[in-house]
Length: 310
Image 1: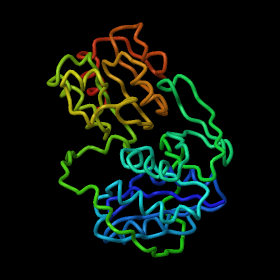
Image 2: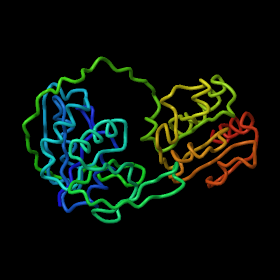
Image 3: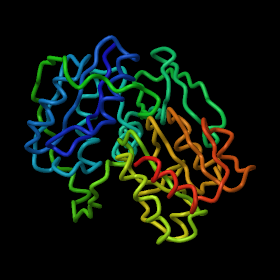
Image 4: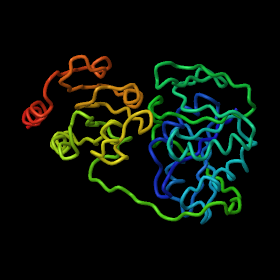
């Protein structure tokens, strides 16, 4: 069996979730190949070839792959799909946009957001906002899978020496075109890749009060996040949202400030290595998953904590 990983990249570098997906793929098949579909993507190809455990990198280089349009990338995957028992992509916006198209064209059922590989045809995935784990067995000839990166360790970025093979690029499907992209610029780490995350919730009271968390994040070199309640209230931008309908994170340290712990939020951060909760309500559900809990007024606790950190 050979598994194919769809690389998520920006043509110059690979996204971190690709490495987690390679780990999942290695547990599915005896051999792992990576497909890099891009434009002038030599740097991303080189990075993919160095991932430990990857034996071959397929390269489809054409201008219409520059922005990762799902219609075009899906057609490229279909062009090589016959050689693989498993096709995997990260369970990010990128992977979720592409693989359902591939599964539909192959007439197979997609297996979404797996967190564990039990065997080449059996997988585990969270359901009911992570309250239960479903074990799914597939008899499809080709398994089309999205991988929740927090469920798998990242494959080593170096140590591999995969062969690189150029494949014929499919023609531009012409069903969509790239219009523009608005990128949020920040000096802080990217939320899903950060080792430390400081998140605020409805208890912050206002968007201005989120500034109280900035010195703490600065001291720790942390990314900043938020609960859906805080985002819906307009306190912070949408791209800060952590949870079932936001970003899934699993940092080494997650500090939840003024977050009650709704099930949808817990689904997005409960795999964090260490969870610290600060809330004035001792009955807040967040304390049920926290490794360390502090009951107190965040407007007093956070400045004191920053002072202690020097």
